[in-house]
Image (tube, rainbow, N blue to C red):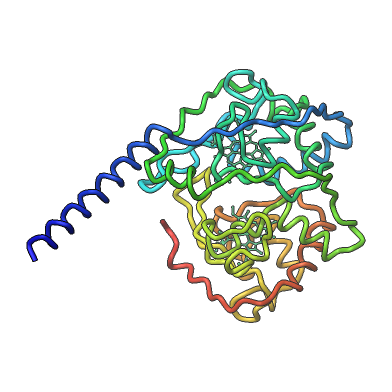
Length: 321
Ligand code: HEC
Ligand code: HEC
């Protein structure tokens, strides 16, 4: 009996030691680094590309990267005991504070895989644009290089991230960079409204990330496999006003809990102006896609009609994280 107790005590001691050693290891190792195999590409910044890039960047990237000086100089992104303190980067053309030193290929590589110019892994607060077409990605880069006021050099330097041990462990073991695509990615034709709507909702505007069950169970490679795809309930806060949080809405066509009784016009007003069905303002956790064209609104609306209906009643009282 005594011997058995002793063995158990030794075993517990060994496990505790192993955990301490692992914690020490990940604490020292920090956020992992990977090899950067950036393609050798120079993006031809045609006026068409800059205009297209302006449309995309000013609806998606601004959500996190908009800074206090009206440029894309970044902001505090996450500050919680679980994952630590993280900042959305300054992505203006400033060579030190911003992304002035990135080559076009390095930008393509980061935006597809999540590996930064210096090799450090960017966890999924920074969404990977793994489904966007090569042409749209090049347009984003063309805009970031353009003479648009929002991307001119800003000296605002974001502080270094302060990841917790948990964040370091998760970034080493659970989150991985995505592979750089081997073949060119093209967008579906606009004449196929449903396919084009899916491309917008999943690939460029990334509506599904906020509108599924949780950021933790989002499937970036096959978005439809995300838990509760478009069923809502994910707790979202607005990086520009972090006190304002709300669970995302159910965008499937459920007649009671989703958009089953909405008109396309109501949908357009929610997406563009943050107006709820009852005319009340939505939480600013729902970005305003003010620039969205009628054509793109209709395509997303057409696609949402085909998404499997989920009976998830999103309870707004759960807000205010
Ligand atoms: C949901 C918030 C969010 C959105 C949306 C977002 N980003 Fe980011 N981005 C981040 C965060 C956070 C980081 C910092 C990542 C890190 O350092 O690990 C980052 C980092 C970057 C970097 C790397 C900067 C550096 O210093 O190495 C670039 C470039 C970038 N983002 C571009 C974009 C572009 C272009 C878009 C739009 C297509 C975009 N981001 C959309 C949050 C976001
Ligand atoms: C950054 C996260 C985020 C993104 C990205 C996002 N949404 Fe939302 N959305 C929300 C949140 C949170 C709410 C709930 C707001 C509230 O209840 O006040 C919401 C609400 C809505 C509503 C109102 C539904 C209702 O029942 O009141 C619609 C419609 C909507 N979003 C459509 C979209 C579309 C289309 C896209 C992509 C173009 C999108 N959203 C992208 C977070 C997001």
